Image 1 (cartoon, helix red, strand yellow):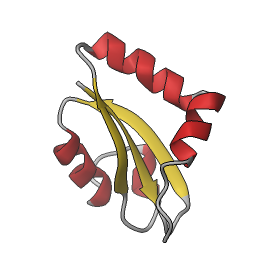
Image 2 (cartoon, one colour; image 1 turned 90 degrees about the horizontal axis):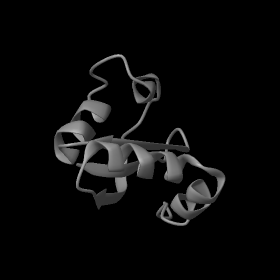
Image 3 (cartoon, rainbow, N blue to C red; image 1 turned 45 degrees about the vertical axis):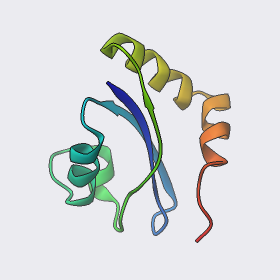
Image 4 (cartoon, rainbow, N blue to C red; image 1 turned 180 degrees about the vertical axis):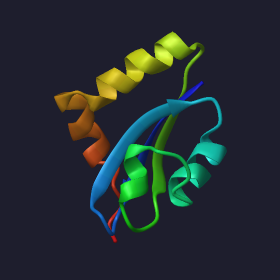
Length: 82
């Protein structure tokens, strides 16, 4: 399992999620497939962070941590300059 963060320069949006296949999930975000949060934003999503964890429960816990105030502050430092 992986926890990952995506950034969309055009929309200036950050997205944090978890999956068992980061490459497939990034493609889904960028092709706007499915009914998910990122589909409503124009522009390409870029992978800025990924972390491997052993189980889905660990992934969900880490995702929650990254979505917290301190976690978001950390992921903001990973956003590349355009």
